[in-house]
Length: 249
Image (cartoon, rainbow, N blue to C red; front, side, top):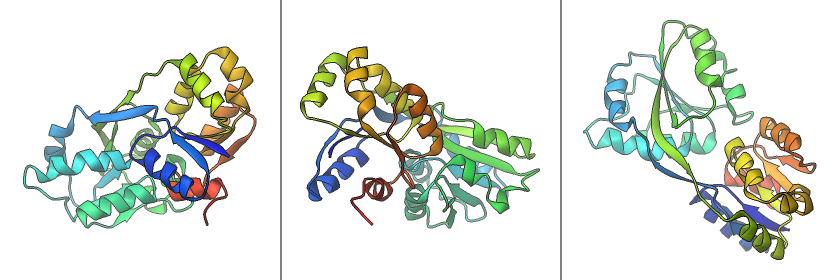
């Protein structure tokens, strides 16, 4: 395999390093990068406004990376009286490492559709739910909690910014390197990857690559765009991606 990893740094570089240790040809090609969010200064007061047994949702490791300094820099800690949820294992571990709190996450599959099926989230009427995320993103979690009677608020902890590349030049570069496997971890990046390259590169090369994604929702989007060989990893962390590539167990 010749593998192109499109997830952001540093996770892309870490995955490429591990792939190369298994003897694979792999390159990092991050499609987005991150900057601090516009609402970080609101986070301490929003946490203070939560009551015992209210809910905090952390939707990515990047939210942890930017949110925790916003808390510690004003001399605060993550309240022990709240219930914390993460979208996946890696995010849960990152949040636990900085907060010391117990973090619940969906073990079956690391997606919002599974998170909202957790038994403890079925009866949330009258409780506040603070969702820590990036700019934009899916609304499924917030809408579901709202429909169940929770008072939902979002905090933009970081912003995703598209990295700019010259599509024709990149198409020639990756075709010359024989890329035949792509790793994509979000719908936003999948759309960006598809739109980046000229039609000739999409038809002759890109859509013929094996595509590794992290959810059935992304697999459906990929097939709608024209990919035929699509593999769904069991999670979005690098261990799960390596397992999907049949390189790690």
